[in-house]
Image (tube, rainbow, N blue to C red; front, side, top):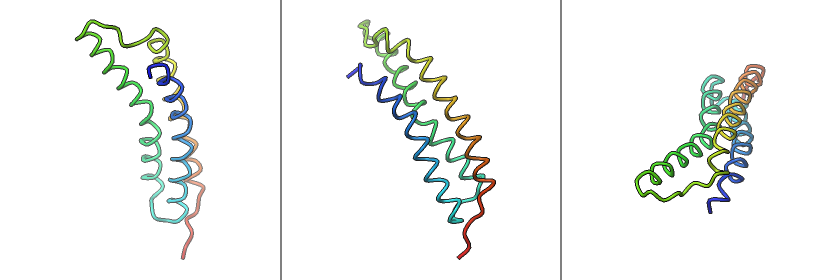
Length: 110
């Protein structure tokens, strides 16, 4: 199971922002959500996989400290920085891109 966390989290870090972009763009286009609120929700939803990855890592480190047995492999521990920084970079660039697209989008009337 431990060996699946890195590829699964990397996939989620890449796919969730795309899905959130489409979902929030549709809401802005329909006029059911303001541009600012859609941009904030996009940033929040895009950051969830990164925060979950870091949270799972910290929980596993805490369990390791309490039990004394290593639950985290070396590759998993080294991937934390790459996935966290890369994921937050995707969130930042995606949020900026979404804000520009949302600002240029005119909601449909009717």
